[in-house]
Image (tube, rainbow, N blue to C red; front, side, top):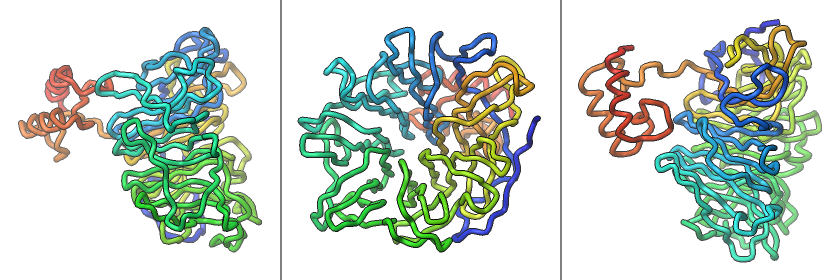
Length: 438
């Protein structure tokens, strides 16, 4: 069955920070592997796997993820905008991408080659892949590193003294410090950082507090959501689950297990809590243990099951919930018409109203061949006139001046040919786009 997307209205605390549309603008399959869909691989090498993959998208629409390469020792390989940019690594590899085109991932202690272990980066503008660091001294493992839109990297690191969370200044690790000097024990899941230097992490301290803490980057720390707190739904927070995310306003997206069931919450730096979704209202029947992600408009994307019990991905602005993909969603794939047979892996969202999901695709009807794919979901319509660089709705010589400024500043509008780079080839592409009109 081909299913149209629609907005569910829910009664929850808090207000919307951004207006959700009433339907999805479109879908694009970025990569595909596995299954029984004829040509089994699209934009990926033969013998690749997308099992358990969590894609990341920045505000320019650049996408990265790590796939498994079974043809080369079952190593994990970093993929960015259609290209494989790393050798196969063992250990944890889960990349994220910032607005400056900086991609970051970690290679854990289980990689058999010591020289591989540490934090790695790939820069879109230069095409250079390199190990940034294995710091701090004595580190034995690295959690999933995250990169803020300004390029700042943060990670949870395991040392002989225990786990710590910090940021990287160049290749140097700078531990996050608590103003009250109370030591923290950090859980081994994803942390989050924004361009203001605020770091959110799941932890407990020697004072007995357990839950989500916000470090302000200047030595201050505050408990955002501790176990035993009361959600605006009236339920008691019994635990905070898996990873989290933070936006530019330091609102933290949290998956909390409460006395009434799972809830997706947005928690502000002052402790204000907004309920985005629950699994006891009949709209979302179940929320999966997958880290929710938030953009600067306050939209949170998460994974779960809809009222029919089908696997689905949703986005919420704190008032409305939009189902962005579920079993039966129709889209156009590289092999022709397809339907979603399930939603697996992780999710992400950017400020442009685009989400990325890991979905099982099938040829209609649902019972025929299947395979996993990374799918970009355009929640809102995207700019289809790239030559209008200054965004005034017209194509004029002023757009050339705007392109030159973007080129000199290595800004996203410079990339007119969509290859993820900003270089002289984009001038020719701009001319073609300009002559083609809008």
